[in-house]
Amino acid sequence: MNASVSGTPHTVVSQDEWLTARRNLLNEEKELTGQQQRVAAARRDLPWVKVTKEYLFDTPEGKVSLADLFAGRRQLIVKHNVLNPKHDLCVGCSIEMDHIEPARVHLEHHDVSIVVVSRAPVAQIQAARKRMGWTIPWVSSLDSDFNYDFHVSFKPEDIARKQVFYNYAVQPIPVEDLSGFSVFYKDGQGDIFHTYATFGRGAEYIMTPYVFLDMTPKGRNEGPRGNLTGWVRLHDSYEVPGSTDQIGQFVPAKDCGHGS
Image 1 (cartoon, rainbow, N blue to C red):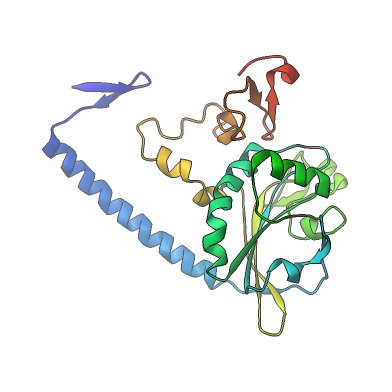
Image 2: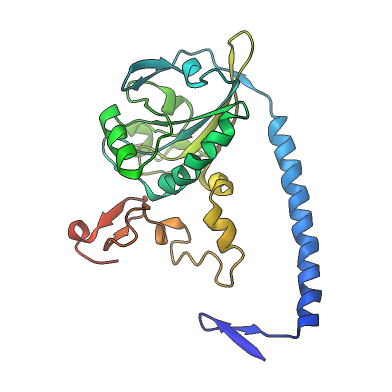
């Protein structure tokens, strides 16, 4: 007997046959869990790089340093949000922010501060926070080299030469900013070290919709683009006619000239 998922035939079996198949898959899932634990241990064992450059960020209250972002804790996660003077909120960064927001209280009670950094001016950042209901600290690196030094923002000349260094490879990238996470540690002497960074699909672990979708018969079902720009919207825009472009900007129908 067969059933179908979106027109694709799928085998239907007895409960006993299903249990046999499920136990076989469970063995593979346990292998994956073990591999994830080994990778997490290797991540923690990476060598560190001392941060010797001074970085200052703009906030509504004035300038703050990288050290200030730790807020008295030893560990700092920076979410690089692509918001910049030329581009509004990105659906990819926004779905990540939706997950960071409720996790923040738990992280802060486990010696981890988490802060968002963008090359947008403070006023643009504040407008985005208000619109989306986020309270997480979010600072501007518009007048800083921070984004460039940590490889999430790119110089126009490198973009023109199609020689952009992102996600540990030189590649052609047509935009000035992309997303990522950078992790830092501050020791008892106040020295700061860069310990880890991840980009692209490395952020999928924090997005629980993917965890749930991977359990379902249709899976991620992300369409021809094969990524979240095919379906994710800003959380206040799912009922708004429009579409998301290839760089993750949601364009309302009145601006793009077509519906979703």
